[in-house]
Image (cartoon, rainbow, N blue to C red):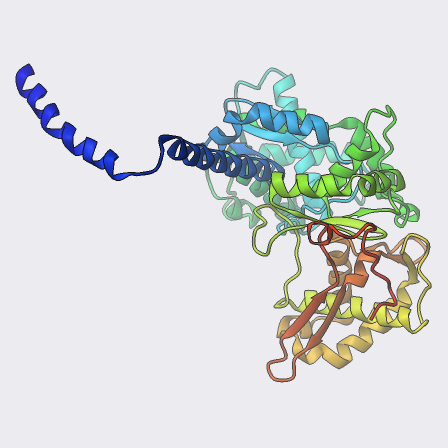
Amino acid sequence: MDDETYEEIEIQAPDIAIDDAGDTRPASAVSDMLTASRRRSARSDMLKAHVALMEREVIPAGESELFRLVKYHYRDLQNWHERHTGWHIQRGNSAVRLARHPSAITSGYIHANWKDPRDLACLAWILWYAENRQLSGRGSDQQFLLSQLAEQIQEQSANAVGETEKLDFRKLPDRYSIRRALQYLEDLGGLHLVDGQTREWVEQTHEADVLYEFSDVIHSLVSSLSLEDVLAAAPRINDRTLALEPALLVDETGGVSPLARAWRTLLTGPVLLRYDDPQAFAALKQHSEQIANELLDTFGWSLDINRDYACIVRGSGTATGPVSTLSTTSAVDQALMLLSGSIRQRVAAGELGPPDRYGCLRVATEEITDLFYHIRERYGHNWGSTARDKSSTALLNEVYEKMRQIGLLRGPDAAGNVLVLPTTARYAVTYSEAGQEVKSTVRSRSKRAAKGSAEPLAIEWTET
């Protein structure tokens, strides 16, 4: 048998030799090509891992390919964040995640499923419930009934907040809120549906109940919560008199450098404003070329830096996380862009403003309302029936909400004023005559495309 095997190998050997002989390239050239190919593959893997950590709250072990990729490159990924953001990567057997600590109270990562602030209140109470079970010694039993969860949350919220803010799951809107919070955690892998239908519990069908089970991911979410960040942000969020003030979270320890704050705000988005953090913005300008190259090499993103703000520009359709964007097919987004262009025209004509030294514009809501009524009267017939059936007040509130999400506006404050941010001056749209499709123009330029410019591009409100 050994002889037969030996003969088979001898017969195949000349074929292999012939194949090698057909490649006239030097062995060193072939080796260089293989090395270059491996480097491209490694760079692609690192970029994929960086983007996944940034745009995903949690990467569960169930997503085996991405989970293994991040764990394999963990040391390089962590070293990068130690140098630039100061954030830590949490890794375990069940999940990995990037524990992000913001330097501003704004965020460019928005979940479309959140409909009401009470959704987030339910999320916070569910995390409390999970941690309370762990501390009380019931952590080994991760299963719970939705009715028990609701009862505990309702009781605790009644003791912790005022009459108007407390949760009452006898009311349908609050049941929908907890359903959305549970669905969010289920999507993250923080809990699993064991038995029952949440919809039936929400609709109170035949005394329905639902059995859930927490996973280890839930405790990772709890452990990453920063009480200091929450305590610092809460007064700013709850006090409407501060709604238009700079959004910088004060670092009491002084341990975060201005450049690290710039990185943090750029990555969490939606925009780094000179108005919010002049020191961080100055550090960004000083290192703009380096940061632009680092962004492109690490994430595949571009840096758009102007006189008063900077933001990340992603390629169309490349966002994998809950990044809020504008769509020309959305009636609300069309109204938003039309409103932005009209505000710019009013500033250019001297009818609004002038902007302050940071490019921000303080405007009474009555002026914005009048402007929106004019836009709706002129262009509203181009919008879908859903938008046309809404009152102007309801539609304008949706426009305000979207403008806040993508970093165009803040407020209204207690006095009824809004702060129109310099980013609003980027947008100008028109309707084509034939199909009435929106043609949009975004006045921006990425830093990579403007390397020859010594100063950041200044986008003026009066620019035509």
